[in-house]
Image (cartoon, rainbow, N blue to C red; front, side, top):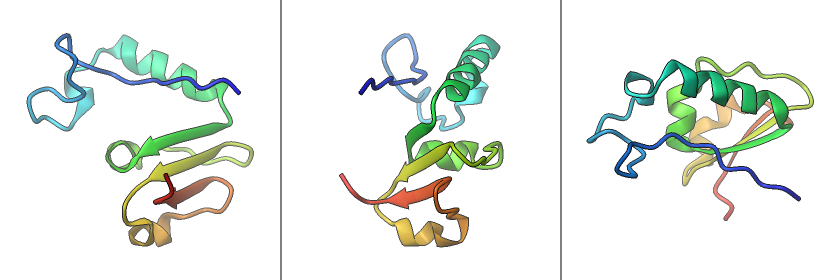
Length: 92
């Protein structure tokens, strides 16, 4: 199994820019283009709750591509769940 980690971080190694949770405000168009290209390559994408919250309006669900969101409260997202395509878990 191959695992690929994709993330944006600041030059000083932070995943947010001084408490700014909106990564699109400080990341580049090239970052976004690369991220979208990488997403197309994989059938399984695992992300955290905050990432899901920031991209949920842009997610295009499709059969054969499964997204799992790691959260302490999966029941909070019951209405968003699409079995086999978008699932929420508190599993480690």
